[in-house]
Length: 383
Image 1 (cartoon, helix red, strand yellow):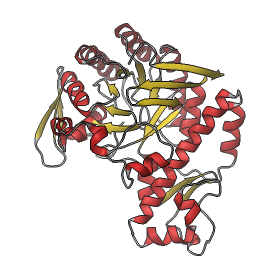
Image 2: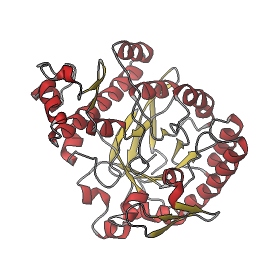
Image 3: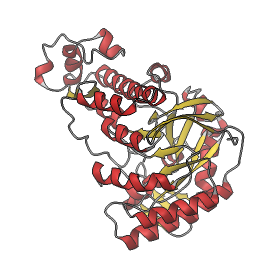
Image 4: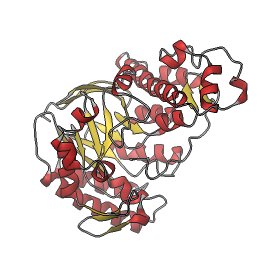
């Protein structure tokens, strides 16, 4: 990315609106990136994803390394061409799998050796190899290879993990090949400890990155603790660079994080929830397996313009889910991604117009029920 890789356009309190400039186009922030772990947003075509308003998606180094293989993706023209996605792509480095697949890996100071959860084959990831894979994938935003610190962690364990990640961040920076429109993001670690987050932020800013991620959150600490950690972590990071909160989250997570100054998000919740019969709506979360929807001719969400809402009834969607017809998860995934895109677009507009707090309150006031999301599986979750 060039020096003008991110333009901060407005602030409303600590909430921010900006534009990220990449080789494959501009992205307006706050932005939610649908997760396309293995080169596809599950249950969606690329055209369907585009129709939701999504501009940037996420892929994963670890999963694409296993299949179809990074070199193969490179030979086939890169991930954009392979999956018919002409917009920007951010790739997770495989660092989350260092934590989530702990039983299938051996870690040392140089990197990590994984035993594939698919066929048991051995694969080696180092900072240099992770950056090389992301280059072969043609990621607009490459992430440093790191260790996502598990929660809970003692101060001693969190410090050891964070300092290893900072060494790997320096090696990632050295391995990255600068090109106009492409950038490398550093990842702040340190669990929920303020002094460790400060040490991590100092190390990263001294190295210098095109953007900064807040890692090691949304791993079981709960929303209140996540927000408390963001309150002291975000001011430590450069104000003129994008901030990316990895693996977050629910709509209320996103609103709270945007209020604190986060610009970028990704999470499997909207896609996984769609496949398990849950719909995020302007009135809260609906479980479409419930019998109460069986005779309901109304729409999922009268405020939504996706196909599930404009062409079908709750009764039909409930029938599809109960009958295990693949169209059911497709429609709910489409709807959930559209809801998340609408949410972040509303927040952006409110920031630009100086009314973020009122808009956030109005959105949350309409939620009738917000059950907690189901826990992610290690194979599915990317951050």
